[in-house]
Amino acid sequence: MGKSEWKDMREFIEFCESKGEVKRITEEIDPEWEVNGITRIVCQNLGPVLIFENIKGADYPLVTNLIASDSRFLWSLGIEKWSEFNDEWMKRTEKLTPPVMVSSAPCQEETIEEAGIDIGKICNVKWHKLDKSAFPGTLSISITKDPDTGELNAGIYRMELQGKNQLGWGAPEYTHGRQHYMKYEELGKPMPMAVVTGVDPIIEIVAATRTPPGIDEFHLAGSLRRSPVEMVKCKTIDIEVPATAEWVFEGFIHPGARRLEGTEWFGEYTGHYGEARELPYFEVKLITHRKSPLYHGTREQWYPSESFFANGRTSQAEAYKTIKKLVPGVIDMRCNVCYEAIVKIKKLFKGHPQQVIDAVWGATYGRYKHVIVVDEDVDIWDYESVHWALSTRVKADRDVTIAPRRAGQWLDPATSLREKGWQTGLGIDATKPTEEYEFWGDQIPITVDDPDIVERTKEKWGENLEKLK
Ligand SMILES: Cc1cc2nc3c(=O)[nH]c(=O)nc-3n(C[C@H](O)[C@H](O)[C@H](O)COP(=O)(O)O)c2cc1C
Ligand SMILES: [Mn+2]
Image (cartoon, rainbow, N blue to C red):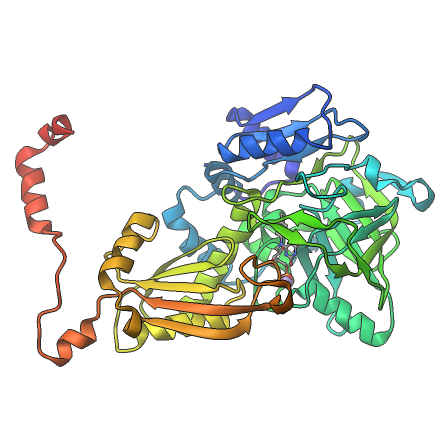
């Protein structure tokens, strides 16, 4: 069942290898299309971790599909099954665990000085056909420091190759990293930033988790891994990085600097291409790395994708924690990586589902557009069951709430360019309309579950039931 205290990405890969879930590709691979094709097909089958050892034009191996399956995601946290996941996350992260500092670290074993930097030789992959250029930054974690509080933030934001030592920085204004940058811009100062890739899987996970503001993701990681993260100071900037990262890029984002991404499109986690954006860019001044470093990247796509696990499931757990503390009767929650939250409740009062819908919109950070609330007899892990509730318990004029002009996600393909950043909320109360029936003194419709008959049948028929299957 894995464990939680991984020393580094290598130890996790070794574990996956012992389970037969790693494939090394030694043939020469074309970065223009072959990483795309192989990663896509293998990921869609929830297949193994892939290590591309020989990509044409790149000097280093590339890892994809690291935690892109149910089994590997759960192993990375040492959790046995999905049904335990939300509550285990909540329990572990009740108290945060600060990192410990070390003075020498594997991530600084080797150094590439500014003059020798050529990021295109480190990762040169075109992840989707219509991406015009390589995007080395898909699973690269931007680490920044709040200039007011000194707090660290870690977030994964897309990074396009824009020069030998320059990368676009795809962090929209609602991300914590961008909010740090906005403070530096007000001060008129360049923002120091470290970008790391190839980390212990729990660090990848926290960097992709949508949390409330003011949470240092490395504290969250310490709690999830049940042991503090070891960190080391960068060589040229006042930023700490995980000591066992494979790659560390140290540099700056200059205030006021904007550049239109060179690509017209970039394939995104929504499963659609997103448009090019006018973005700040990151200038790399020094690279440090481990001996024989492994680069880590991913192909963004619809489920299954690494984002679905690293961002979708984890942000779901944080949202669950928040909602459970705000509203009584919340039993479970399932969120799709893009825009949908399904919440299971034990309905306690009139307006209870609507309060849950408001809480998801107002108090969680996944920016879920669509919220569906169901009763405790619905299995939210089975979409058939959710659809049964939607089709049998919803009267649209009564149970559907439309909330226009909410804060949205930048990449929502349902929203045109003019309206980017906005979204319309759809709340559906798919619980049984108990209050309507109670008002008139009527019997609420009951389901055909007949649990006593099921018990009697099992008792009498026992193992013979298996034979009837
Ligand atoms: C592979 C991958 C790529 C991502 N790319 C982006 C991106 O380009 N822009 C973005 O805003 N979020 C992106 N995310 C999601 C963010 O990492 C996530 O929202 C995280 O919470 C951001 O950190 P923050 O909350 O500290 O700002 C990506 C996540 C993953 C797993
Ligand atoms: Mn954050």
